Amino acid sequence: MKKKVLSVFLCTAMAVSMLVGCGGQDVPAEAPAEAAPAEGEAADAATEAAENAVADAEAAVGERPEGGYKFGYTCMDGSNPFFVILEQTIREEVEANGDTLVSFDPANDVTRQISGIEDLISQGIDAMFLNPAEAEGILPALDMLKEAGIPIIGFDTEVADMSYLVSYAGSDNYNAGKVCGEDLVAKCPDGGPIIVLDSPTMNSVVDRTNGFLDAIEGKGFEIVAQQDAKGNLEEAMGIAEDLLQAHGDVVAIFGGNDPTALGALAAANAAGLTDCKIYGVDGSPDIKAELASGESLIEGTGAQSPISIAKKSVEIMYQYMSGESVDERYPVETFLITADNVADFGTDGWQ
Image 1 (spheres, one colour):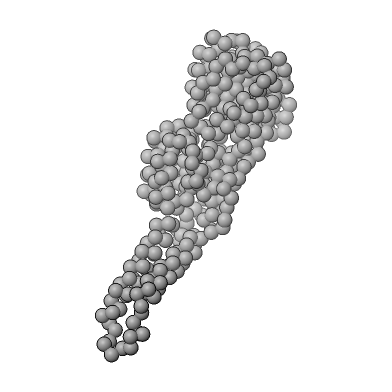
Image 2 (cartoon, rainbow, N blue to C red; image 1 turned 45 degrees about the horizontal axis):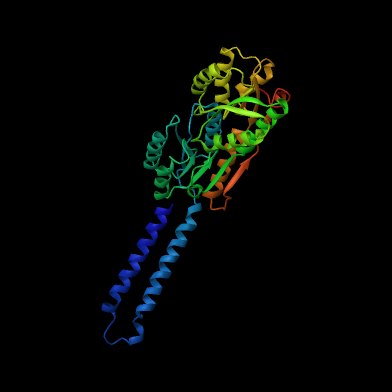
C-alpha cells in the first residue's frame, strides 16, 4: 500500500514539474506578465498537487482488492498443538471473508522463517500475521516487510522492536507463569529444589518464566537447574532426563509451555518420581487430560486461548485494512487450570 502511495506521489510531482518547466516556453510574448506563474507559486502548486495525490491514495487503502486480500502467516512452530489450532482458526476466519491465507512453518528456525517471509513478499501478500521464532533474530524479515509496505499484525510472542507492528494480540504471559508459581508456593510452603525449563529466545516464554520466578522468590525454593528446552517436547524430555539423574529430589519442574511440561513428565515418569509437581503454560487438551486423570505429576497449567488470540488478530487485521484505527496491543486473559477446575474447561479441545 505504501508503494502505491509513493508511486502516485512521484507521478503527480513529475507531471506538475513538467508543466511548470514548460510553462515559460508556452506563454505568448504578448501575454501580460502576471499570466505567467511566479516560481514560488509554481512550487506551491506542485507541492499541493502531490499532497492531494498522496491523500487520495491513502484514502484508497481501505478498498478491498477485487480478488480479495492475500494474507501471509508464519509462527515459530507449526507442529505445536497451540499453533495448529491458532492457524486453523485464522484460516477459517479469513476464508469466511472470501480472502486467502498463505502459511509458512519454519519449525523453530529463524533463518528459515526469514527466507519464508521473503518468499511470501514475492507472492504479493497484502498483510502479514506474524509470530517470531526469535524476537531479535526476526528483525531482518521485519525490515523487508516494512520496505515492501506490508503491514504486520503480531500475535502470541512479541518481537524485539514492537514499532514494526501495526498491532499485537497475545496472552498475558507474565501472569500465566505467575499463577503457576503462586500455586506451587501454596502447595509447597516449605520450598525445595526445582528445575526450570525455559526458552530465552522466545519472548513469550521469557515473560512466563519471569512471572513464575517472581511468584516463588523468597519462598524457600532453590533453582538447581535452568536450561533452554526450545519449547519442544523431545528436547525437554532429553534435558530433563539428564537433569533428573543429578537432581532426583526436586519438588517441582516448570516448563515454559505445555510441550515442555509433557517432555518433563515423560522424563520424571521414566526416573520413577512420585512426588514432583510439574507445571506448564498453554492449557492444551493433552495437559488437561493429564490433570483430569488424577494420577499425573502434572499439577497445573497457566492457560491461554489460541482461539481467542486468533479471532482477535483477525479482527484487528480487518479493522486496519478497512482504514480504522487500532490499538498498539490487545491482551488476552490467562488463568490457572488444575485438577480442581479442569472439568470446567473439558479435555477434548482448547478453551
